[in-house]
Image (cartoon, rainbow, N blue to C red; front, side, top):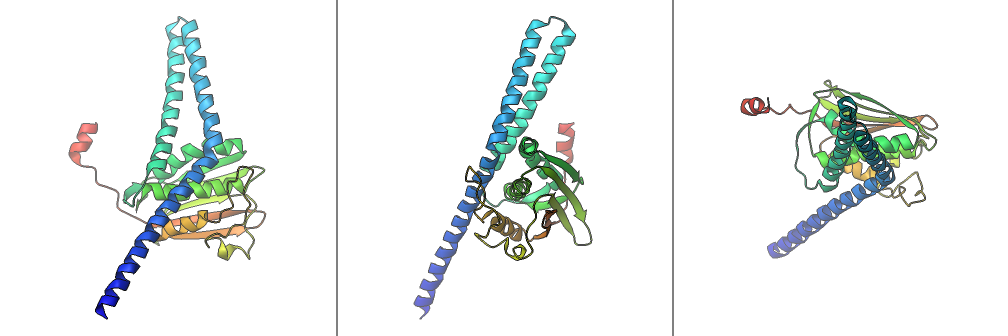
Length: 267
């Protein structure tokens, strides 16, 4: 009997390992879907950056006055730095794997995502408003939580087909000892009868667009899995025709201690 029990336990362990691996692959696939949703606007933005660099490089070559050349160099530098922030954010987001967690500044985490979606929101006539409280820390896996935030923002943009307002906020909730991230839109909203099911796998309230994006019913399910694994919560409020607000709650963490030697070296 003990041998049979051992065999069953081994089989269960193997199945659990397979499920964990499949879940990780699904998270990575969903990440690629999110990146695909931004590809058009990102390409457009990079083209704008290149045109800025080219035009100011030409201006710098034409003008001999130091002041004009300095202005051209400053514009080229600013454009290059923006491109660098976008590529760095995209590469970090695409490559992030595993389940490593550490205390991170939540506002900075959100800002890194907003760099990626800024042009996409502009192209779809969505006005962005932010309220990001500083010095709010949570112990999280950066790539996983950024994926959740990106998914919620893309969902919000898709719910505002004619444009609208998107508000992203970060705050400390000391009474519950949570860091809160809220993504609020003025879109179509979610019908009351469908609201209890939005986190169910394969349940969706939208159809795929002309490029086949959206409508899989996996995005919100994966979001909830990620937040649950962080011992957090997800709350949703929605009024049809007025909009939807998703609030992510993550346990607060103590800010990491900066070693004095490192601080001296950095200064």
